[in-house]
Length: 173
Image (cartoon, rainbow, N blue to C red):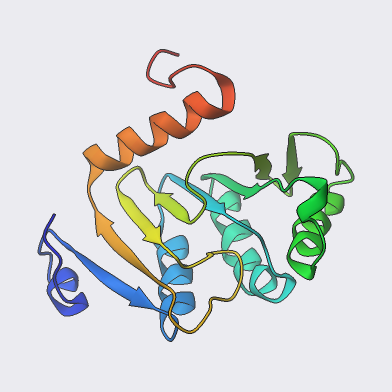
């Protein structure tokens, strides 16, 4: 994979860019708003403030008919002790079904997951965000993610995630 500057990417070059703490939220929200087919976000935890900023864009995407899925890592009971888990649980409580595996938040599917990559987004089966940015929470100072467009890699990643969730490939369905 070739990494290029965001200016090169905007000009249509096939590549990616590193996104840091300072500019991730605006760029991620723009990608959500420009999505045309689907949005899949996997995060290790959620913060209420970050979710409040992203939820309008996610709901707008759903209202435009896109498939929108947000998954948060389910922590063991011994790990649950901070506001990150409270924010994730609050998202699920909003749908009134906190203990279910999959819930619906105004058309946005929210799920828990136990293993696999935790800081990943796949938009329109081609645009990938992958790195240390938590995506549904605010990052630490040194967090960053690679943002790249690669439909083949996105398909492989997404297929692996669906296999993990339901035990079979979406390609097989």
